[in-house]
Length: 327
Image 1: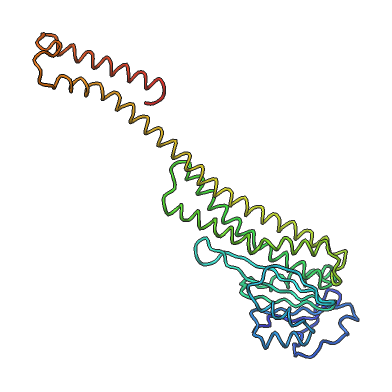
Image 2: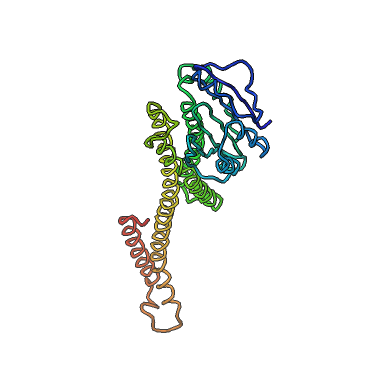
């Protein structure tokens, strides 16, 4: 069923049984007692959403946005109702892939309606935790809004943790050897996912900041401190993601520099050995020419003398190259 839970609360305590969602405009007694209704929906059909909209007099434009899973985080005010869109994120089934969902929240003086679309993180545990804390739940639906947003933002942390483990492993491996093509493709895939995360989740910071600083009719000024805590969590999550993106970029750059250094060392070693081997090659080439009057050609000690010269020059080059660190 799209309607996961529907309860009425008075002074932080839930009424027995489920709240009936019939499409009939809600009664006013909940507000008179200082209570509120909380209806949670997951991937509702248009008919189900229409029934909830008629019961709580939700604005049709907000209802349309709630069913559109491609909304960016935002805050809209419709009369005395607040409409909030937050984006959820969690690791998907594919390697290093983030799946995104959406949670839309309708907030009034005496009700809160949460609509999850494409989000696998249910609010059942959150609802039970809030119902166990009647002191805070009695503060009203704006506190529930804070709790829902905090629950969503906390879902970003496992993503950051997993990406950090992968990035650190890649960074450590890049110190010893240049990444293979598969690792390089993974690095660029991670960077693409992080850029997408910033594009989709980034507006969450602006959205929560508006809840902190703006004078909104359904947000009690005393509740702003709770939203300030959510804002701090959003900023930390975004900072970690940006740091990860920079780490991956630096890993490729550093690995390239290390590989250039390793190639430079090999090149110097090859050049040194080439210079040493060039000496006997040159001498042998000269004495291999078919001329009768080569120097010391018929001298008894000519052959040992040539070897002595070759070994002396090669030994001097070997000593020199080792001294300057080429060998």
